[in-house]
Length: 313
Image 1 (cartoon, rainbow, N blue to C red):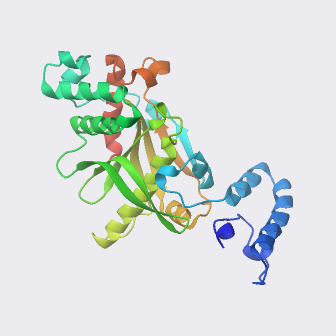
Image 2: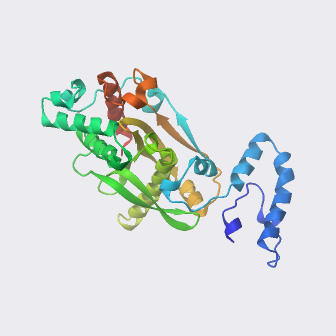
Image 3: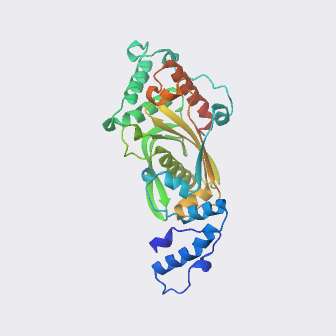
C-alpha cells in the first residue's frame, strides 16, 4: 500500500477512481487514477489544477532536518516576508535591554567589561565559523538571547533539542539548534542556516517549520498528560533562523489541522501562512556578510530581538 498510502486527491472520492475489487493490483489502481485525473486536471481552472497537483504530490516520512521547500508546497504552507511595521505591529522598534557597552564597542579587545567582551568575541567567532565549528553560532545565539533577557527565572535555553515528529504515519524527529523552554512548554525555536559554508546543507526554513509543527504537537501532549488541560487548536510559535549573526524572524501559526495532515501525509485544505521579517539594516546588500559587526546594523538587529519578545509566550 505504500505507493498510494500518501496520495490524497481533493474533491474526488475513492470510489470514483479506485475499483473496489481487492484483486486489482497496485499498478492498475495507479493507472486507473491517472486516467481519471488527467482530463480533470486539464479541463479545470488554474487554481483547481494547482490544488489537484499539490494533493497528488508524493509525501514521504522524512525527519525534520531532511525537509526541503517541496514539503512546504506538499502541505500547503506559504512564507510571506513583511516589513518592520507589518511584522512587529509598529514602525518604531524599542531600544534593546542589553548592556549598553555592547551597542558602542566594535572590537572585543576594547570591551570595558567581561560580559561585553564575551558577547563580541562570540559574535566574531560566529561570523567566521567553519563547518567543523558550526555549533559556535548556536553558542552565540544562547549568549545573545540570555543577555537580551529572554531567559528570566522559569525559562531555560537548551541547545540541540530533539523533537518527536509523526509524519506520514511514521515516527521521525526534528532537532532545534536552540530552544527556549518555560516550565510547561517550548516557546521559541532557533535553527542555524548552514548554507553559507556548504552547498549540500538544506534550507533552514522547512526545517524550522517542521520543528514548529513537532513543538506544537509536543506542547499539546504535555497540556493533556501533565497539566490536565485541553489541547490548543492553534498557536503562533516564535522562531528564528541564524546565518552567522544574521537573523530572520518568523511567526509560525501551527494548527491541529496541519499537525494531522503531516501525521497522515495528506494535503490540508487550509493554507498555513508563515510571517517572516529580515531586519532592515542600513546596507542590506552586505547584510549577510557584515551581520551584527557594524554598530549601526547591530542596533537595528538587537532592536528587532527586543521587539520580538512580545511573541515569545
